[in-house]
Length: 246
Image (cartoon, rainbow, N blue to C red; front, side, top):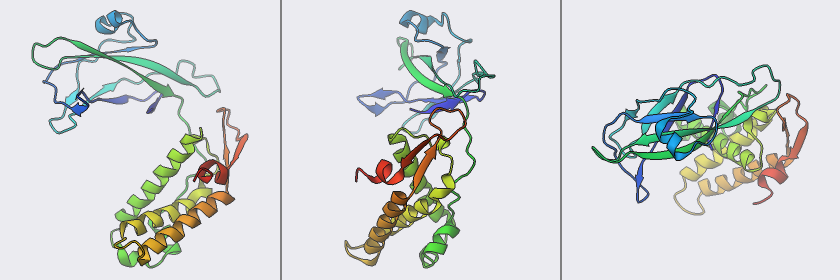
């Protein structure tokens, strides 16, 4: 589930579907209401008890999947002086029509808003990191943005792996420790993208860096703040938490 932070405008998207395929709604002014608690359908349609006036504008795209994009004004932290981390659920009611002069339909959705997190370090992996580990890579890729794309994919995968074990990226205290793990994964992804035959040099290199990735994670510990009090009181063996299931 996507989370948002207190004190910042929230951009939301609405994708209408028919038989699980995107449909392009008619141009319209929706009525979108925000609630602190799950409203009744009557309240969701009328806006009774909503936190603010209805949102009646969204941008419309004529290109599939036809997103309707709108902004919810920033929700203030309900207890800004509290030192503890908080994450609260809010409900939105989207009232819309599918066709001109059609019946108003209502979609209820919940989303979470949390206190902003901050980290003391970042992994810091760049294309120069990859070149330092595997110098020949610059001979295959002249556009550094391509390598940055592989780094971003490797970091995104690691974030998802953390999350699958209940660890938020923003709670980890020493993300710089994962600099080379991300680099190894990025080189693996690059090598996989170059494979022509199952046993060619790129396939062999992808396997080598996959093992390097597993090895470095097995040697690392993840220190993280599990309760949001600013102290990294929890430690997990990265090898057991992240790669133990493979």
